[in-house]
Length: 346
Image (cartoon, rainbow, N blue to C red; front, side):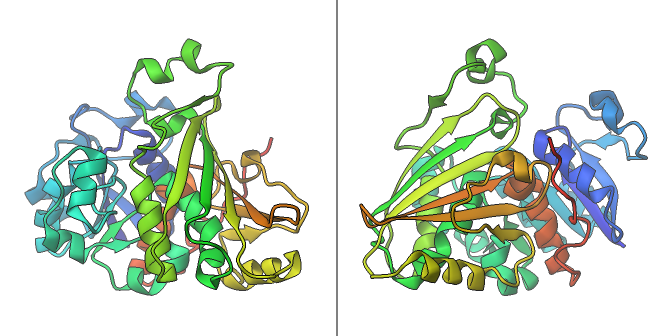
């Protein structure tokens, strides 16, 4: 039984980890940690969890955490993980970080895009980028996982087969992404106030979203070709879900059959990626509450562009579900363990 600790248990990613791990046959939630609700029960914060026997929320104490857990999930704001991880790793505890502290290999890029001081270069070098479908072998040997961001997960799963094929111009990528409000976290702010968000769609952080260099880094790393993207996120008045619509200019004469074969081959042994048939348009509702990513392709013969549609649940595949998938592989378990959930519909 894997002894699991969760830091940030009162946030959306934290409580989703609890939902998933409560169903996991090989994981026991040994400790839950919170900097804001120490000494209280999680059921007092989230009454829907009252039927689950969970430990009382504890203060964040790295020394105690290192003695009590085999793996610790850090569902924290950016800037926290870089302080906690070194002590946990030194004690032999594996770390899965759901913040952005270890996603960028360049400390200068982190400083520029996150406006915070980066982790040490030693920690950055130790971290494995946990996009499971493309880095499974590295994940299996990792001690520190940088769990990908929600937008990069949806974007990269959709883009990487084509990017690696060499059939598209690496400077032509345009990514239009739309996310539900839960992607902003549980904190209260005017930007996610009901009367501000309801019946409205808005772009935000245009040209400056911190997930931009993460997507570029992984496209470049996987394809071997320097890649630049145009990325614009939008906020949609719904709770969960991300829809990515990505565009790329083809440089090779290929038809939709070849593109479909490319994607089906790339994901044939990846149980959580479902490549849809041509002519279909996946909806966020069709992956709600699950660890699936649904992808569909459209070839625009008139413009010579490929349009890639990719949908995920941002709290599951975009955060907690992918983190559990990575944990499974780190501990030699089937990647699907505890995650074989059918999407909730309607």
